[in-house]
Amino acid sequence: MNLNTLRQDIPAGLVVFLVALPLCLGIAQASGLPPFAGLLTGVIGGLLVTALSPSRFAVSGPAAGLVTIVVASIQTLGSFSAFLTALILAGVLQCVLGLLRAGRFISLVPGSVIKGMLAAIGILLIMQQIPVALGAAGDAELVSLVTGDFVFSTSAMLVAGTGLAILWLWTTPVVKSVKALGWIPGPLVAVLFGCLATVLGDRLLPGLREGLPRITLPAFDSMSALVAELETPDWLAWQNPSVWVVAVTLALVASLETLLSQEALKKLRPQHPAPSPNREMFAQGIGNLTAGFLGAMPITAVIVRSSVNVSVGAQTKLSILLHGVLLLICGLWFSNLLNAIPLASLAAVLLYTGYKLATPRLFIEQIRMGAQQYVPFLATIGGIIIFGMLAGIGIGIATQIVCSIYKSHRNALQLTRYDDHYVLRFQQNLTFMHNPKLQGLLAEIPENSVVIVDHDNAEYMDPDIKAVLQDFGDNARERGIRLSQWPVAVK
Image (cartoon, rainbow, N blue to C red; front, side, top):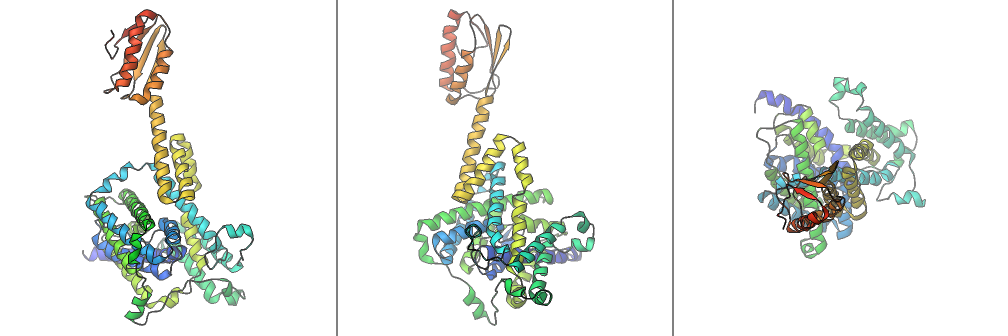
């Protein structure tokens, strides 16, 4: 570390903090947890995980992708304390996976399933945040809009709509061309507008403030007050089988999201040597273990904050550590300022995040790539929305396997006709599953033909395949069929 890196890392850390602050608060709120839990998660990710991580640029903290899992898990387990026990177990599982060097298996997860998982997360996030953007202060669901039980808030809709407009504006060339504005994150501007509406709104529009539910952060006047705010795990909950299901789900999805972020980060800023995925998984496991003990939320490496860290010129881990320190200071001594943030502003940030995860362009791209891509993609989305994250990923992988087998099966054998000559090509190794296809092609060959077999690409054939070829060869002479390069001996 030298003066040069300090001059780049300190501004980078400040920008990452400004991006992370509204996301930490918004993700906690969306999960039905106190906003302080989101800040605490950001602090653990920014300090502890960063210290253990092999990556110089990956920023860890609460992830929007885990919101739906957290909400569903707390409902299933009945309490946040039981969920914390599951989070501790998930951290232990991640550490074990890291020690077993399981990070290399990330390449086995099909791209269609990964994209489907991210799109499903985006859709669920949008469904969850629409009621908040329309004025809900509690746990109102999207269905309440249909049943007529929902009370709309003009103030919330105005703040959320303006926030979305600001976030969109910050992606346009007009704003990007202004270098000074490029240093100010769009989510921060959207949140600051919401704060202005809370503080000064009544002067412009009477009653505006009353229609804006806000976050509530506790004020800490002593260390005992801080400790009292922390939730403790329910240590007896480990006996509940549902806790283990949640733990496995958290461990797998958090590890998947972390490793995917690492893969994406390699393309933005290569490191030599590349960070070990196994060490990263172990670091995340320690982070989630600590988060479970302290009453925080699940932690993953997050590509949005990591890409911001890289784009603003970070050189070392100092920028990430600084962002964690600033989150801690903000939560301890500036809670009154943060309490001015309306929920509608955070909803706008999360709605925009959900849109980026499930953008229509992604669906169009998958459909253009053919059924082998879009069928597993859509199956993953449907499975996650209907059955949950772990089951949905399993459905997506199973669908991809079926599609790949079908495609491979169709192209494994090829029969081409040249006058009375037929060339039967084996494009790959053949198993008993290719028997129906092989029998169908052999049945197309008429009498008094010449059959040439090209089997250079097939290094292995099941005994069942050889039996079908043997049977055809034994009857070939009676039908006037001459065989050339036949892969099995004919009696």
